[in-house]
Structures are given as C-alpha cells and as structure tokens.
Length: 370
Image 1: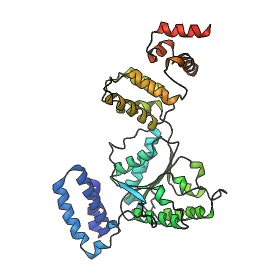
Image 2: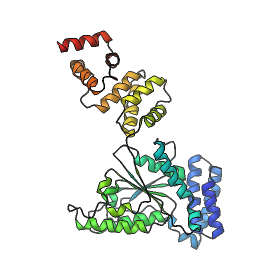
Image 3: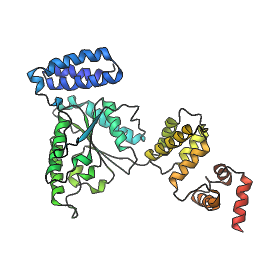
Image 4: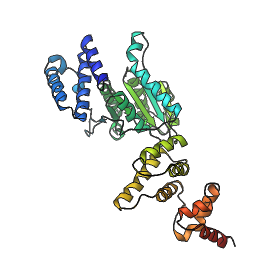
C-alpha cells in the first residue's frame, strides 16, 4: 500500500489521542497526494485538515508554523523539500548500503524500542571529500522514509550578531522537533568546530555548546549532518551521533552502476561502459555525473552524434589538468598518458583518442625520440 506509513501514523495518533501526530502525518499525506495528482483524495483530506485547524486544539499545533527565519534579515533558516527516489538515486558500496539500511531499520523500529524502554537516537554523521554524495544521500534517506527534508541554510544560520547564531540553531532544531522530518545540517563544521581551536573567537565556542544542548533535546527527530572536514569537529560532537559513515570516491562497481544509469538511454556497448569506468578512476560520483551530463547536453544542443571517444576524452580531461588534445601538444600528452598507465594507454588506444591511425602515433613517437 503506497501511503501505508502515513495512514498508519494517522491511525496511531487517533487511537492514542495524539492530535499533533494526526495533523503532522495528514499534512505530509496531502503533500504526497498533491505530487501524485490524486486530486479527489487530496480534497477530502484537506477538508478534514481544515476542520482540525479551525479547532482550538489544532490551532496550538506547532506544525502550522512556517520554517523559521533569521531575526535580523528575515532569511529562511532552512529549505523544506519533498525528495523523490528518482531525484536522489544514489549508488553505494555493499558495506555502506548495509549501514544505511541498518539506520533506516533502526528508525522504523522506534516504537518497539520505546516500548522496551530503549532510547532512540536517530542521528547520522556523513563525512568525506566534496562530491561523494553526502547531500544526495540525505535526500535519499528522506525519500525512503517518506518524510520532508529540512535542509539548513548556513548563510542564514550563521549571524554576525552576538548570540544570534545560537538563537537561530535553537529555533531551527525546535522547528524540526515539531513535525516528522529529516533535518539535514550540511557544512556541519561551520557550527560544530572544535572548541580548543585558538583561531576561533569565544562566540563560536558558545555556538558549539548551544548546538550540543539542542541536539541532546531533539528526542527522536532524525538528524543527518555532513562535513568535508571531520577532523575539525569538536570531540563532543561524535558522541551525539549514533551512526557515522565516511563516503569515499566510488569503487569500480559503483562507477559501473553510475555510468549504466546515466547512459541507459544511449546505445553504448558493455566494452565502452567498462572503458568509461576504468578511465574515471579517482573521480567522485558528482564529477562523473557533471562531466557526463555536460557532454550529453552539448551533443544534443549541437545535434552531434553521441560518441564514446568524445566522452572518454571528457573523462580524461577531468582527471588530468595538463591534458590537451590539440595537435601542437599531442606528443607530450601521449607520452604522459603512457607514463600514467602504459598497459591502458597503448598506442592503439592513443590512436583512438586522437582520431588517427596507429602508424601515425608510432611515427610521432619515433620522430620525438630521435
């Protein structure tokens, strides 16, 4: 049943007399019905909601609150979205998948844990170099759980006014507690930097204290934080996160999955996909996605034929900033490619990359070695 998680929560709230829970999940269900084009069902639930909102009890619900804003400039402290799995499709290693599946199972068994008196701490810290999919994974989690994603805006959260940053953090985390959601704190080191950093002023150290206190009061709110600089985080931060995961550059298997999905509408052979995978070693998932879409976009706009050689060149140009396919620097670049991996960059493969015969490549090498 497609809307079972929301309907189940609505029924649970009704049976327990928790009107806030009923309101939260009814509004979440309405958002999903609107996205899916279920206009008749949407109208029915909206009428029910109107009745709730007109009652004294419903008017006290914190769910009706808009996303909080920064007091001085009125910028929104976060963006609220409703991610879909199509938009946030992500490829992980087997081990990383097990961690994420465990995290989701942990959240889904919240009621069982609470019934046994076991406190739940649904917090996940993601770290790794830029482009490894931290933000996309946060959206993927929200989509799989059927919850909205509340993404903090660092530019609004951090204020130049004394004490305002701590107030903004408290306001945002209190808002996240008021409705079912996944709260995502990106660039986490900006507000969670180690307090023993001598370069930081006292105000930012107070921000960390405020952050720790507010995380402790989140209860069972789902919190995902991400940073490119995990070594900068305050040591106390680590104890607040039940799950931690480092995202690395994609493995060969993950790159194969990624290229297969990115190019599924085009008639590339398995051998060509394998070459893309080999050539893209050390690139992040974001780099692969950007360069692939950039090439496809240019080809479509210019009405050019989709060509495997062109995409291979694009991949190599992303990896090696010294590489050029201009005729005047061809020997230097050919030689450097061979020095990088002589088994991969054979004269036959090089001739394919430069669109010339293998005999001409041999001639170029011979002329420059004399």
